[in-house]
Image 1: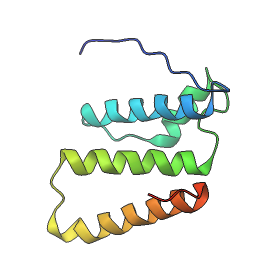
Image 2: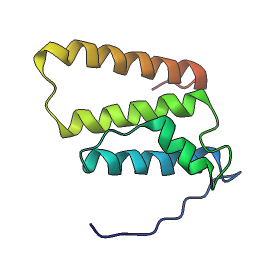
Image 3: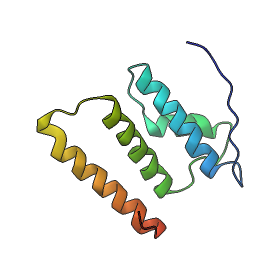
Length: 103
């Protein structure tokens, strides 16, 4: 695999930047067929970037982005489709409510 360098910038250099770095690391895990452990990924990022991923809405957004990514990459078995949709809607609702954003 080719190694590339990436620089991510946000206002304080931790919240949104940490979010995108964690999301990229999680995508790399999925692409390597390993389980993305969000808490461990964020903990590793925080060794160099304290306060990375600052809020619960950012954690929820990480999981939602991963869910969207997974849904695009794999075929969800019929037996799990409703559960996947329920989780997706719950995360979307949590984020929408917290951010007061209408999608």
